[in-house]
Amino acid sequence: MGYQTEFNSVCKFKNAQELYELMEYGRGKMVKQGFRVFPTGQKVIAYTPDNAAVAIVKIVGCIAEINFQGEEVTEVEMELIRRLNDEESRIQTNLAYEMFFGEHSTNG
Image (tube, rainbow, N blue to C red; front, side, top):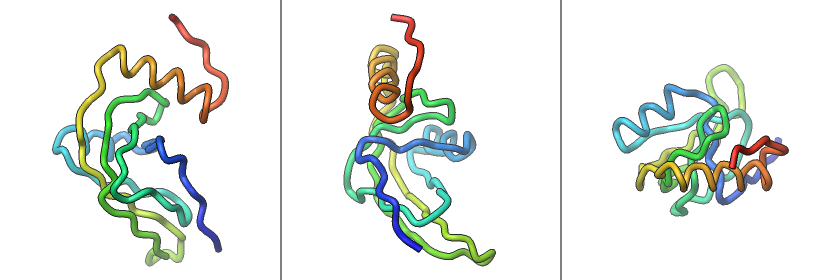
């Protein structure tokens, strides 16, 4: 058992429904496997399941627990600050591939 620290600038969704709820309602929750530390109070870039930057969000809560199935999970609550425009999204996506996600072919 141990905590894994997330990159301070990355909030990557694995579940499209969780991302949709955040973008639609302005608040949302993301569930991650394992115990993780997310920087509560910090603004971060949110990424889609296919690694595209889409928004700036603020982490408002982070709870790590063992669920009823005995799995270690972390629930991250956030609020939408604003959506990124096309240029911001392209730049942030390219930077994230260089820094976090690995090699990526760019079109510009």
